[in-house]
Amino acid sequence: MKILLYIYFVFFSTVSLACSSLIDEKLRLLDSTESESLCKYEGDVLLIVNVASKCGYTPQYDGLQKLYTDYGDKGLTVIGIPSRDFMWQEFTDESKTAEFCDATYNVTFPLYATTRVRGDQAHPLFKKLSKESGKEPSWNFNKFLVSKEGKLVGMYDSKVLPESLASKIENLL
View (cartoon, rainbow, N blue to C red):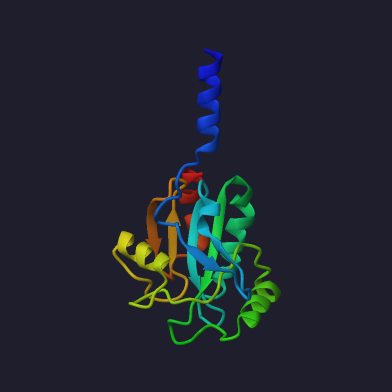
């Protein structure tokens, strides 16, 4: 019996569950040459947002940061992904984007490299999010809420304030 328990423990302690196919993507970190897999956030509730520094919705960084501050230690990860898909409202120099987010909004949640979020050239993450939701991002600050299990819970357009999602996030945590 002890041998069977030992074998069971050794086998199942070394087997890790596969990452959700929705978030099984690599992204380059903002203003860096390093990339990382979003699978590192497997088991977290994710709020994935296409952001921009020079947009009328840019003040939503405050709400995103507040959510991350309030719920980050409970299992929420906010992921910001800058895009220039909408009237080039993001800096072309990623160091300026990083500096802006830090200096203006004190952003501490993960920010990734500027990427395409719609159309044929969209990053595969956004192609999957768009397919699951049935809608592509229509502007900057579209928000995709993903459960701990890696399932898309909802897509919210730019007009939806991040803080209005707090009760949905609490329910998922």
